[in-house]
Amino acid sequence: MKFFGYEKDSEKLMKLSEATFDGTLEELEDLIDFLKTVQEEHSKVAKKTDMCHSHFRDWSNKWNKEDSDFIVVTRF
Image (cartoon, rainbow, N blue to C red; front, side, top):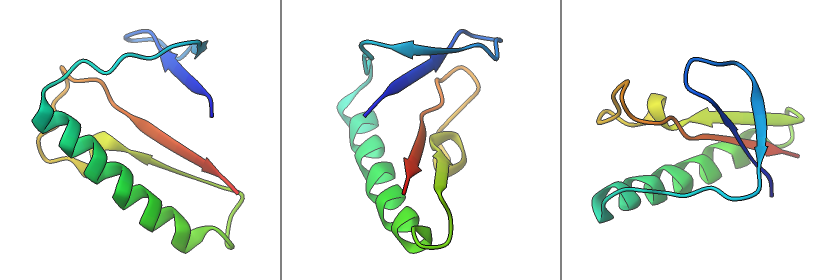
């Protein structure tokens, strides 16, 4: 498993050695629900593609531009 990040307003991808989640228990529950959904949806396309990705911002109706996006990339 690898984690990457972007600086705000930058397209430069950086490999991270650590990542910190800073949020509420409710936000943690939302992230867990998102990951469960990603697991389910990515499993459906596993044999059709080499890779799949999902954005938290597209999944959550609570997400706003001030929040960080969380992108899950699954390689098969």
